[in-house]
Image (cartoon, rainbow, N blue to C red; front, side, top):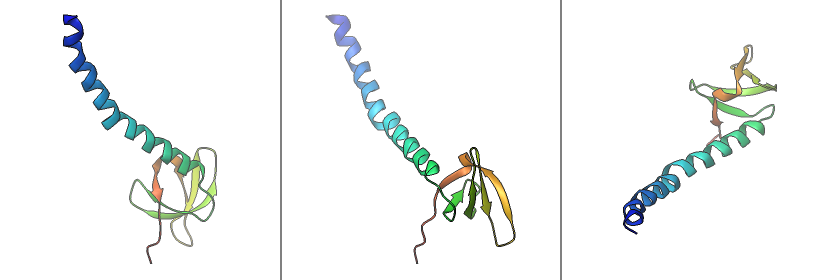
Length: 88
């Protein structure tokens, strides 16, 4: 019985860490993966480098994106941070 009373605070701390840190990160990661899978031609996205680009072509591992009217480059899907929503 004494061992149980000593382990209970540790179990409680682990449960708090799970619900405060680990679970929200997993939900955010899952939502980001779903967003990346749902990308299509014409979507505006923000890259890890801070560039706002337009998706030109979706491939298996890469995205071809337009930086401007003349420049089309390939980026990895992992470098997409989020979709860009026009505020105006």
